[in-house]
Length: 301
Image (cartoon, rainbow, N blue to C red):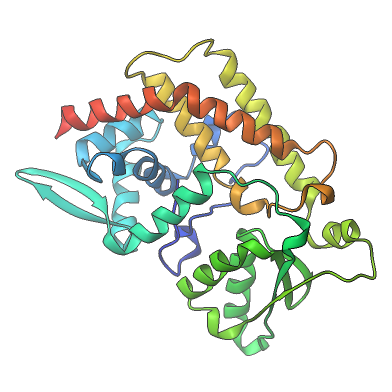
């Protein structure tokens, strides 16, 4: 799972769209995503074992995921430059650990990705964000729009964004992280009309596109579930790759999905089934995947 740590959107804790959204299967989402996968490995596993892994161990795990050594080492170099990871030695063994300034973002990602939220309550109200940025600062305007979109905000107009009220703290943290907090105004409010609430929601969010992403995710999860009639015992490479692929595919949804009140969502809503599938696969494969990483760390340290 990835994290929010730098001003580069590529290092945000939500990488929200696959390069090839129409490609079948979970494993195909790995292509061109070496940095994201490395952050998944640290977020899911390595931080459970003192947050450090030898270079050889990381290369081996990435190889299990179909990423060659050259791509892994190039991604590691980029991530060190961005301040996401840092090189550390243990005796004569070279390795990597999460950079201290990246840890808060990793913790935010843990909470958001691994603990799916229930839909918001209607009575909670809304958070409204406004920002009027001149054309001369177009790059700042585009960066703000991209980050708000990546974090589930709906768009009511060129300079008005909307999210369920409970998202306020996370949005402030995001805006401060990207040094955008001084150019926005944020309000809390209740929707008063005139259109019906579901019409307002439909205009602000593309729920049809999100529902299609959920359908594809569920199809892929069904394929994984058919190969695992029971949890594996002990370390298992296939359990590791399958579970990592599932989380890698899942990680965009807690950001894309704003967690709207259930009464505003289409019925049936694929998000409910997707949460169930994700939690089922975590229960089925998570421990064996963790054991595989532990064995790899121990054998390469």
